[in-house]
Length: 145
Image (cartoon, rainbow, N blue to C red):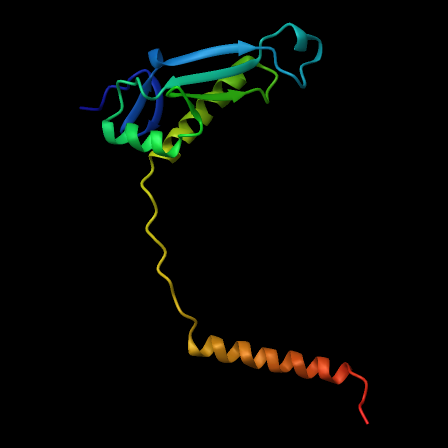
């Protein structure tokens, strides 16, 4: 039996933020808009209370707090979209931006880099190239007597 889609913002296959937890604010945006720029509230602010969310596990909450620490204000993550003229397009942009930020913060850390050493062949090629270059520059010098 297929899973019943829950209404909300799908961040990962395992995490969907309920619509009830999202808070919207609209205001007038600067930039393009023609005659309606001073009357239409096309700028969108989308907020989500990370610390008070019911859909997160403690592990997810701590990882979000650690990775989004500077972006969280009193436990609330806010994204802004004002690049489009239409409010609906800015709403879609804000939803996509919020999902991307949360998904990126929840992703597991990448494995640590294993330090490597240059091979003997690469060392030899480097030294051979240096000798060639120094020979070229030596030929450009004035002859000494």
